[in-house]
Length: 334
Image (cartoon, rainbow, N blue to C red):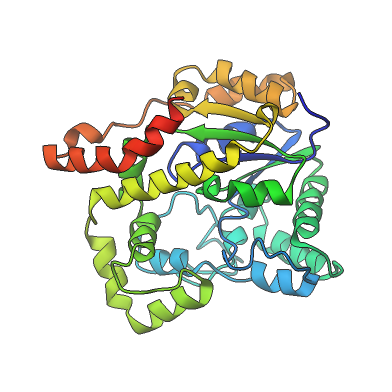
């Protein structure tokens, strides 16, 4: 295996089981499991090549993700969001434009997420002008040290799509690639409110919308009813198969350029069927140890395989979804 590990990342599509894996890894008390750090940063900023100062990054981290805001304010649940809305002294109410990391990542790290967020922003503002790679490593290292953890492992839904960018940020990283049957993943995406709207917007079902903070904010301001229509309907199933397949194909192209020793392939179905075996493989690959029975605690988080949806579709829907997923499913079977 290649040299010392200083960055560890879990990559996959959305709805592929990576949230469960993040929760499992969080059972290791030497690991800071960071949920969805990169996925909520505006895609036109998060991998910029030119250096930025700490104040600019802090301002980006203070932004909400408009897609999440528009879904929450309409009363839909997003299970990944664990910010304690409604509790005494908490800063944000449901539907407020809450900073992305504060909605998902930081409440899993601290019982006082607002205070941790403020501390983190002060830390980031103090960073000098430097490439984003240095900023991200510094703040993630800071979060781990701040909470007495030896290592951090970041996991973002949809990150297989920007694996090449992650590798450019962290050329010394090791990656666990978790994936699930594409058809079931696509159907889970369609049932998930944020992705139901997001994928429809990306593929032009509501016209030409730039998928940026500014573009999505303008969409909410100008055409709120379109968001409600998307939330209340089931867009064509093949749209989600196409979205899943394109992510996998992009990721596969990036994987081919990496040293095989820095990538571990994990099937979600195997993780659920034999969690101790799979977590042991991941522990060895990430070099995070097996002490303190964390693998047993992680394995205990598995309940059962989620219900399969593909068989509930009409014959025509099955055909369309199969055709959309087929190119990427062939890549995963190699």
